[in-house]
Length: 430
Image 1 (cartoon, rainbow, N blue to C red):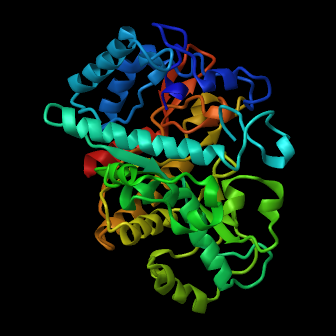
Image 2 (image 1 turned 90 degrees about the horizontal axis):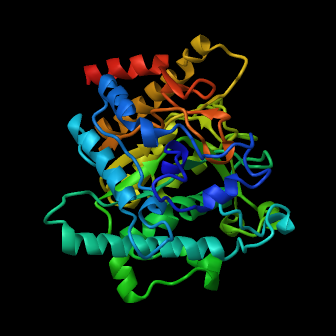
Image 3 (image 1 turned 180 degrees about the vertical axis):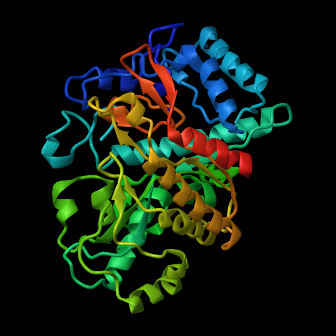
Protein backbone atom coordinates (compact mmCIF):
# COMPACT_ATOMS: atom_id res chain seq x y z
CA UNK A 1 0.00 0.00 0.00
CA UNK A 2 2.90 2.39 0.72
CA UNK A 3 4.04 2.24 -2.92
CA UNK A 4 0.74 3.58 -4.23
CA UNK A 5 0.37 6.33 -1.62
CA UNK A 6 3.72 7.59 -0.40
CA UNK A 7 5.78 8.60 -3.43
CA UNK A 8 9.16 10.11 -2.47
CA UNK A 9 10.87 7.01 -3.82
CA UNK A 10 14.36 8.52 -3.76
CA UNK A 11 14.14 10.53 -0.55
CA UNK A 12 15.72 9.92 2.85
CA UNK A 13 17.68 6.86 1.82
CA UNK A 14 14.84 4.71 0.50
CA UNK A 15 16.05 1.77 -1.57
CA UNK A 16 14.55 0.55 -4.87
CA UNK A 17 11.73 -2.01 -5.02
CA UNK A 18 10.52 -4.45 -7.66
CA UNK A 19 7.60 -2.09 -8.32
CA UNK A 20 9.96 0.81 -8.97
CA UNK A 21 11.68 -1.23 -11.67
CA UNK A 22 8.44 -2.69 -13.00
CA UNK A 23 6.62 0.63 -13.29
CA UNK A 24 9.55 2.18 -15.15
CA UNK A 25 9.50 -0.63 -17.71
CA UNK A 26 7.76 0.44 -20.90
CA UNK A 27 4.35 -1.09 -21.48
CA UNK A 28 3.82 -2.48 -17.97
CA UNK A 29 1.50 0.26 -16.61
CA UNK A 30 -1.69 1.12 -18.51
CA UNK A 31 -1.08 4.88 -18.62
CA UNK A 32 2.74 4.66 -18.58
CA UNK A 33 2.93 6.38 -15.20
CA UNK A 34 4.86 5.35 -12.09
CA UNK A 35 4.65 5.76 -8.33
CA UNK A 36 7.63 8.10 -7.93
CA UNK A 37 5.21 10.72 -6.55
CA UNK A 38 1.96 8.71 -6.21
CA UNK A 39 -0.25 11.01 -4.06
CA UNK A 40 2.72 12.25 -2.02
CA UNK A 41 1.45 11.10 1.36
CA UNK A 42 5.07 10.94 2.47
CA UNK A 43 4.87 14.71 2.74
CA UNK A 44 1.11 15.28 3.09
CA UNK A 45 0.23 12.71 5.77
CA UNK A 46 -0.61 15.31 8.42
CA UNK A 47 -3.28 16.93 6.24
CA UNK A 48 -4.67 13.50 5.32
CA UNK A 49 -4.91 12.54 8.98
CA UNK A 50 -6.90 15.73 9.56
CA UNK A 51 -9.27 14.65 6.78
CA UNK A 52 -9.82 11.26 8.43
CA UNK A 53 -10.44 12.89 11.78
CA UNK A 54 -12.98 15.25 10.22
CA UNK A 55 -14.84 12.25 8.74
CA UNK A 56 -15.03 10.55 12.14
CA UNK A 57 -12.89 7.55 11.16
CA UNK A 58 -11.54 5.80 14.26
CA UNK A 59 -8.71 3.77 12.69
CA UNK A 60 -6.17 4.01 9.88
CA UNK A 61 -4.41 1.09 8.21
CA UNK A 62 -1.03 1.78 6.63
CA UNK A 63 1.94 -0.27 5.46
CA UNK A 64 5.62 0.11 6.18
CA UNK A 65 7.84 0.38 3.10
CA UNK A 66 10.64 -1.95 4.12
CA UNK A 67 12.81 -0.41 1.40
CA UNK A 68 12.88 2.67 3.65
CA UNK A 69 13.97 0.63 6.67
CA UNK A 70 16.40 -1.70 4.89
CA UNK A 71 17.37 0.09 1.65
CA UNK A 72 19.57 -2.84 0.58
CA UNK A 73 17.11 -5.51 1.66
CA UNK A 74 19.15 -6.44 4.70
CA UNK A 75 21.96 -5.13 6.87
CA UNK A 76 22.05 -1.69 8.43
CA UNK A 77 18.81 0.08 9.34
CA UNK A 78 18.09 3.42 7.66
CA UNK A 79 17.25 5.71 10.58
CA UNK A 80 15.53 8.27 8.33
CA UNK A 81 12.99 5.61 7.36
CA UNK A 82 12.37 4.72 10.99
CA UNK A 83 11.99 8.41 11.83
CA UNK A 84 9.38 8.88 9.10
CA UNK A 85 7.12 6.14 10.43
CA UNK A 86 7.63 7.30 14.00
CA UNK A 87 6.49 10.75 12.89
CA UNK A 88 3.49 9.25 11.07
CA UNK A 89 2.51 7.21 14.12
CA UNK A 90 2.97 10.19 16.43
CA UNK A 91 0.75 12.30 14.16
CA UNK A 92 -1.90 9.56 14.30
CA UNK A 93 -1.63 9.31 18.07
CA UNK A 94 -1.94 13.07 18.39
CA UNK A 95 -5.33 12.86 16.65
CA UNK A 96 -6.51 9.96 18.79
CA UNK A 97 -5.59 7.08 16.50
CA UNK A 98 -3.91 4.01 17.99
CA UNK A 99 -1.40 2.16 15.79
CA UNK A 100 -2.86 -0.54 14.11
CA UNK A 101 -0.16 -9.93 -13.61
CA UNK A 102 2.17 -7.81 -11.13
CA UNK A 103 5.74 -7.00 -10.29
CA UNK A 104 8.41 -8.31 -10.55
CA UNK A 105 7.11 -9.35 -13.96
CA UNK A 106 8.14 -13.03 -13.90
CA UNK A 107 5.91 -15.73 -15.41
CA UNK A 108 5.73 -18.59 -17.87
CA UNK A 109 2.10 -18.36 -19.02
CA UNK A 110 1.00 -18.30 -22.68
CA UNK A 111 4.36 -19.64 -23.84
CA UNK A 112 6.20 -16.69 -22.22
CA UNK A 113 4.25 -14.14 -24.25
CA UNK A 114 4.41 -11.57 -21.42
CA UNK A 115 7.57 -12.49 -19.50
CA UNK A 116 11.12 -13.31 -20.46
CA UNK A 117 11.90 -15.18 -17.26
CA UNK A 118 10.14 -17.02 -14.45
CA UNK A 119 8.24 -20.23 -13.77
CA UNK A 120 4.56 -19.76 -12.94
CA UNK A 121 4.25 -23.43 -12.01
CA UNK A 122 6.72 -23.21 -9.12
CA UNK A 123 7.73 -19.68 -8.11
CA UNK A 124 4.36 -18.47 -6.70
CA UNK A 125 4.27 -21.48 -4.37
CA UNK A 126 7.84 -20.89 -3.22
CA UNK A 127 7.25 -17.17 -2.63
CA UNK A 128 4.01 -17.77 -0.72
CA UNK A 129 5.68 -20.45 1.39
CA UNK A 130 8.49 -18.08 2.36
CA UNK A 131 5.98 -15.31 3.13
CA UNK A 132 4.16 -17.67 5.52
CA UNK A 133 7.42 -18.74 7.18
CA UNK A 134 8.53 -15.12 7.52
CA UNK A 135 5.16 -14.23 9.04
CA UNK A 136 5.36 -17.14 11.48
CA UNK A 137 8.87 -16.19 12.58
CA UNK A 138 8.00 -12.50 12.95
CA UNK A 139 4.91 -13.33 15.02
CA UNK A 140 6.94 -15.70 17.20
CA UNK A 141 9.70 -13.16 17.83
CA UNK A 142 7.18 -10.45 18.63
CA UNK A 143 5.23 -12.59 21.07
CA UNK A 144 8.36 -13.78 22.89
CA UNK A 145 10.34 -10.55 23.04
CA UNK A 146 8.08 -7.52 22.60
CA UNK A 147 4.45 -8.30 23.39
CA UNK A 148 4.86 -7.43 27.06
CA UNK A 149 6.06 -3.95 26.09
CA UNK A 150 4.15 -3.18 22.89
CA UNK A 151 0.65 -4.52 22.36
CA UNK A 152 -0.34 -5.10 18.74
CA UNK A 153 -2.51 -7.62 16.92
CA UNK A 154 -0.81 -10.01 14.52
CA UNK A 155 -2.78 -10.89 11.42
CA UNK A 156 -2.71 -12.49 8.00
CA UNK A 157 -4.36 -10.71 5.07
CA UNK A 158 -6.05 -12.65 2.28
CA UNK A 159 -8.91 -12.91 -0.20
CA UNK A 160 -9.81 -10.28 -2.73
CA UNK A 161 -12.77 -12.23 -4.04
CA UNK A 162 -15.42 -14.70 -3.00
CA UNK A 163 -16.21 -17.69 -5.21
CA UNK A 164 -19.80 -18.91 -5.25
CA UNK A 165 -21.48 -21.80 -7.05
CA UNK A 166 -23.67 -20.47 -9.83
CA UNK A 167 -22.97 -20.79 -13.50
CA UNK A 168 -21.61 -23.53 -15.72
CA UNK A 169 -19.14 -22.05 -18.17
CA UNK A 170 -20.73 -23.87 -21.11
CA UNK A 171 -24.27 -22.87 -20.21
CA UNK A 172 -25.47 -26.28 -19.03
CA UNK A 173 -27.10 -27.05 -15.68
CA UNK A 174 -24.62 -27.25 -12.86
CA UNK A 175 -23.07 -30.52 -11.80
CA UNK A 176 -21.48 -31.86 -8.65
CA UNK A 177 -18.14 -31.40 -10.42
CA UNK A 178 -18.75 -27.65 -10.58
CA UNK A 179 -19.45 -27.48 -6.87
CA UNK A 180 -16.27 -29.41 -6.08
CA UNK A 181 -14.31 -27.14 -8.45
CA UNK A 182 -15.66 -24.07 -6.66
CA UNK A 183 -14.28 -25.34 -3.36
CA UNK A 184 -10.94 -25.89 -5.10
CA UNK A 185 -11.00 -22.32 -6.42
CA UNK A 186 -11.49 -21.08 -2.86
CA UNK A 187 -8.71 -23.37 -1.61
CA UNK A 188 -6.27 -22.02 -4.17
CA UNK A 189 -7.00 -18.44 -3.11
CA UNK A 190 -8.11 -18.05 0.50
CA UNK A 191 -7.11 -21.50 1.76
CA UNK A 192 -3.60 -21.17 0.32
CA UNK A 193 -2.74 -18.63 3.04
CA UNK A 194 -5.38 -19.17 5.71
CA UNK A 195 -5.21 -22.96 6.07
CA UNK A 196 -1.53 -22.92 7.12
CA UNK A 197 -2.04 -20.30 9.85
CA UNK A 198 -5.20 -22.03 11.07
CA UNK A 199 -4.41 -25.73 10.55
CA UNK A 200 -0.66 -25.89 9.94
CA UNK A 201 -0.74 -27.04 6.30
CA UNK A 202 -2.06 -26.24 2.84
CA UNK A 203 -5.51 -27.47 1.71
CA UNK A 204 -5.61 -31.12 0.68
CA UNK A 205 -6.78 -30.12 -2.80
CA UNK A 206 -3.57 -28.13 -3.28
CA UNK A 207 -1.44 -30.99 -1.99
CA UNK A 208 -3.04 -33.48 -4.37
CA UNK A 209 -3.06 -31.27 -7.47
CA UNK A 210 0.25 -29.42 -7.13
CA UNK A 211 2.22 -32.36 -5.76
CA UNK A 212 5.97 -31.93 -5.34
CA UNK A 213 5.89 -28.34 -6.62
CA UNK A 214 4.16 -27.28 -3.39
CA UNK A 215 6.72 -26.85 -0.57
CA UNK A 216 6.21 -28.77 2.65
CA UNK A 217 6.32 -27.49 6.21
CA UNK A 218 8.53 -29.34 8.64
CA UNK A 219 6.93 -30.21 11.98
CA UNK A 220 8.60 -27.24 13.63
CA UNK A 221 7.62 -24.88 10.78
CA UNK A 222 4.00 -26.07 10.89
CA UNK A 223 3.92 -25.44 14.63
CA UNK A 224 5.43 -21.98 14.08
CA UNK A 225 2.92 -20.94 11.40
CA UNK A 226 -0.19 -22.49 12.96
CA UNK A 227 -1.86 -20.06 15.33
CA UNK A 228 0.39 -17.17 14.29
CA UNK A 229 -2.53 -14.73 13.90
CA UNK A 230 -4.71 -12.88 16.36
CA UNK A 231 -7.26 -12.07 13.68
CA UNK A 232 -7.85 -12.65 9.97
CA UNK A 233 -7.64 -9.65 7.65
CA UNK A 234 -9.82 -9.88 4.56
CA UNK A 235 -9.53 -7.69 1.46
CA UNK A 236 -12.92 -8.12 -0.20
CA UNK A 237 -14.20 -6.34 -3.28
CA UNK A 238 -16.21 -8.66 -5.50
CA UNK A 239 -17.52 -12.16 -6.18
CA UNK A 240 -16.35 -14.49 -8.94
CA UNK A 241 -18.32 -17.34 -10.45
CA UNK A 242 -16.56 -20.69 -10.67
CA UNK A 243 -17.05 -23.88 -12.66
CA UNK A 244 -15.14 -27.07 -13.37
CA UNK A 245 -12.59 -26.77 -16.17
CA UNK A 246 -13.69 -30.03 -17.79
CA UNK A 247 -12.09 -29.14 -21.15
CA UNK A 248 -8.81 -28.03 -19.55
CA UNK A 249 -9.24 -24.57 -21.08
CA UNK A 250 -7.22 -22.80 -18.39
CA UNK A 251 -4.64 -25.57 -18.21
CA UNK A 252 -4.08 -25.26 -21.94
CA UNK A 253 -3.41 -21.52 -21.72
CA UNK A 254 -1.72 -21.06 -18.37
CA UNK A 255 0.94 -22.82 -16.40
CA UNK A 256 0.16 -21.51 -12.94
CA UNK A 257 -1.97 -21.88 -9.82
CA UNK A 258 -5.16 -21.09 -11.75
CA UNK A 259 -4.44 -24.02 -14.04
CA UNK A 260 -3.60 -26.20 -11.04
CA UNK A 261 -6.97 -25.43 -9.44
CA UNK A 262 -8.84 -26.97 -12.37
CA UNK A 263 -11.51 -24.29 -12.05
CA UNK A 264 -12.62 -21.52 -14.38
CA UNK A 265 -13.34 -18.32 -12.47
CA UNK A 266 -15.01 -15.28 -13.99
CA UNK A 267 -16.43 -12.04 -12.54
CA UNK A 268 -19.67 -12.52 -14.46
CA UNK A 269 -22.23 -15.27 -14.96
CA UNK A 270 -22.74 -17.31 -18.10
CA UNK A 271 -25.55 -19.80 -18.63
CA UNK A 272 -28.29 -20.99 -16.31
CA UNK A 273 -28.42 -20.97 -12.51
CA UNK A 274 -27.58 -23.99 -10.45
CA UNK A 275 -30.54 -26.34 -9.83
CA UNK A 276 -31.96 -25.95 -6.35
CA UNK A 277 -31.33 -29.62 -5.61
CA UNK A 278 -27.58 -29.15 -6.08
CA UNK A 279 -27.50 -25.94 -4.06
CA UNK A 280 -29.24 -27.75 -1.22
CA UNK A 281 -26.52 -30.42 -1.23
CA UNK A 282 -23.75 -27.83 -0.91
CA UNK A 283 -23.89 -27.26 2.89
CA UNK A 284 -23.76 -31.00 3.52
CA UNK A 285 -20.76 -31.55 1.24
CA UNK A 286 -18.49 -28.77 2.40
CA UNK A 287 -19.95 -27.44 5.64
CA UNK A 288 -20.55 -24.04 4.08
CA UNK A 289 -23.57 -21.75 4.45
CA UNK A 290 -26.89 -22.73 2.96
CA UNK A 291 -28.20 -20.59 0.12
CA UNK A 292 -30.42 -18.52 2.35
CA UNK A 293 -27.20 -16.72 3.26
CA UNK A 294 -26.27 -15.93 -0.33
CA UNK A 295 -29.34 -14.62 -2.12
CA UNK A 296 -28.48 -14.51 -5.80
CA UNK A 297 -28.94 -11.52 -8.06
CA UNK A 298 -27.95 -12.23 -11.64
CA UNK A 299 -27.98 -8.55 -12.64
CA UNK A 300 -24.85 -6.93 -11.28
CA UNK A 301 -23.21 -3.56 -11.77
CA UNK A 302 -19.57 -3.16 -12.67
CA UNK A 303 -17.05 -0.70 -11.29
CA UNK A 304 -14.25 0.68 -13.45
CA UNK A 305 -11.91 -2.29 -13.03
CA UNK A 306 -12.80 -5.15 -15.35
CA UNK A 307 -12.64 -7.62 -12.47
CA UNK A 308 -14.74 -5.62 -10.03
CA UNK A 309 -18.43 -6.47 -10.29
CA UNK A 310 -20.62 -5.19 -7.48
CA UNK A 311 -22.02 -8.20 -5.58
CA UNK A 312 -22.91 -7.12 -2.02
CA UNK A 313 -24.23 -10.50 -0.87
CA UNK A 314 -20.77 -11.96 -1.47
CA UNK A 315 -19.61 -10.18 1.68
CA UNK A 316 -22.11 -12.04 3.86
CA UNK A 317 -21.43 -15.32 2.14
CA UNK A 318 -17.68 -14.99 2.63
CA UNK A 319 -18.02 -14.14 6.32
CA UNK A 320 -20.15 -17.25 6.83
CA UNK A 321 -17.69 -19.39 4.92
CA UNK A 322 -14.87 -18.25 7.21
CA UNK A 323 -17.05 -18.73 10.27
CA UNK A 324 -17.87 -22.34 9.43
CA UNK A 325 -14.59 -23.51 7.91
CA UNK A 326 -12.21 -21.80 10.34
CA UNK A 327 -14.31 -21.93 13.53
CA UNK A 328 -15.34 -18.27 13.55
CA UNK A 329 -12.03 -16.45 14.12
CA UNK A 330 -11.97 -12.69 14.68
CA UNK A 331 -12.11 -10.99 11.27
CA UNK A 332 -11.33 -7.44 10.20
CA UNK A 333 -12.25 -6.27 6.71
CA UNK A 334 -8.95 -4.64 5.81
CA UNK A 335 -10.02 -3.44 2.35
CA UNK A 336 -13.41 -2.91 0.70
CA UNK A 337 -14.28 -0.45 -2.03
CA UNK A 338 -14.90 0.26 -5.71
CA UNK A 339 -13.32 2.43 -8.36
CA UNK A 340 -14.48 4.99 -10.91
CA UNK A 341 -12.57 5.74 -14.11
CA UNK A 342 -10.20 8.68 -14.20
CA UNK A 343 -12.17 10.47 -16.92
CA UNK A 344 -10.28 13.60 -17.94
CA UNK A 345 -13.39 14.98 -19.70
CA UNK A 346 -15.51 15.12 -16.55
CA UNK A 347 -15.31 18.36 -14.49
CA UNK A 348 -14.15 17.87 -10.92
CA UNK A 349 -17.50 19.03 -9.54
CA UNK A 350 -19.18 16.14 -11.38
CA UNK A 351 -16.50 13.61 -10.44
CA UNK A 352 -17.29 14.34 -6.78
CA UNK A 353 -20.83 13.00 -7.22
CA UNK A 354 -20.10 9.35 -6.48
CA UNK A 355 -23.54 7.92 -5.74
CA UNK A 356 -22.45 4.54 -7.08
CA UNK A 357 -19.74 4.35 -4.43
CA UNK A 358 -22.19 5.36 -1.70
CA UNK A 359 -24.57 2.58 -2.73
CA UNK A 360 -21.67 0.12 -2.91
CA UNK A 361 -20.62 0.77 0.68
CA UNK A 362 -24.18 0.94 1.95
CA UNK A 363 -25.04 -2.44 0.43
CA UNK A 364 -21.81 -4.19 1.41
CA UNK A 365 -22.03 -2.85 4.96
CA UNK A 366 -25.68 -3.94 5.16
CA UNK A 367 -24.64 -7.49 4.28
CA UNK A 368 -21.73 -7.32 6.72
CA UNK A 369 -24.12 -6.21 9.47
CA UNK A 370 -26.42 -9.13 8.67
CA UNK A 371 -23.46 -11.52 8.89
CA UNK A 372 -22.68 -10.16 12.36
CA UNK A 373 -26.15 -9.70 13.82
CA UNK A 374 -28.09 -12.54 12.17
CA UNK A 375 -25.40 -15.13 11.46
CA UNK A 376 -23.06 -14.61 14.41
CA UNK A 377 -19.91 -13.94 12.37
CA UNK A 378 -17.05 -12.64 14.52
CA UNK A 379 -16.28 -9.45 12.58
CA UNK A 380 -14.40 -6.84 14.60
CA UNK A 381 -13.63 -4.02 12.17
CA UNK A 382 -13.89 -2.56 8.68
CA UNK A 383 -11.55 -0.42 6.56
CA UNK A 384 -12.57 1.40 3.39
CA UNK A 385 -10.36 1.26 0.34
CA UNK A 386 -9.53 4.00 -0.07
CA UNK A 387 -9.25 7.33 1.70
CA UNK A 388 -7.65 8.94 -1.37
CA UNK A 389 -7.48 8.35 -5.07
CA UNK A 390 -4.03 6.93 -5.68
CA UNK A 391 -1.63 5.24 -8.07
CA UNK A 392 -3.25 1.83 -8.48
CA UNK A 393 -0.44 -0.58 -9.37
CA UNK A 394 -0.58 -1.67 -13.03
CA UNK A 395 -3.64 0.54 -13.59
CA UNK A 396 -1.59 3.64 -12.78
CA UNK A 397 -3.74 6.74 -12.35
CA UNK A 398 -6.58 5.40 -14.54
CA UNK A 399 -8.55 4.11 -11.55
CA UNK A 400 -10.04 6.17 -8.68
CA UNK A 401 -10.96 4.28 -5.48
CA UNK A 402 -10.81 7.25 -3.12
CA UNK A 403 -13.38 8.96 -0.93
CA UNK A 404 -11.29 12.05 -1.68
CA UNK A 405 -10.67 13.14 -5.25
CA UNK A 406 -6.99 13.87 -5.92
CA UNK A 407 -6.29 16.41 -8.66
CA UNK A 408 -3.21 15.05 -10.38
CA UNK A 409 -2.96 18.20 -12.49
CA UNK A 410 -2.97 20.71 -9.64
CA UNK A 411 -0.42 19.89 -6.94
CA UNK A 412 -2.32 16.78 -5.80
CA UNK A 413 -5.07 18.83 -4.13
CA UNK A 414 -7.69 16.76 -2.29
CA UNK A 415 -11.46 17.33 -2.71
CA UNK A 416 -14.12 15.44 -0.71
CA UNK A 417 -16.50 13.38 -2.80
CA UNK A 418 -20.13 12.97 -1.75
CA UNK A 419 -19.16 9.66 -0.13
CA UNK A 420 -17.15 11.59 2.48
CA UNK A 421 -20.32 13.26 3.74
CA UNK A 422 -22.16 9.93 3.62
CA UNK A 423 -19.50 8.27 5.77
CA UNK A 424 -19.46 11.21 8.18
CA UNK A 425 -23.19 10.81 8.77
CA UNK A 426 -22.89 7.03 8.91
CA UNK A 427 -20.10 7.11 11.49
CA UNK A 428 -21.80 9.80 13.56
CA UNK A 429 -24.97 7.71 13.80
CA UNK A 430 -23.27 4.42 14.69
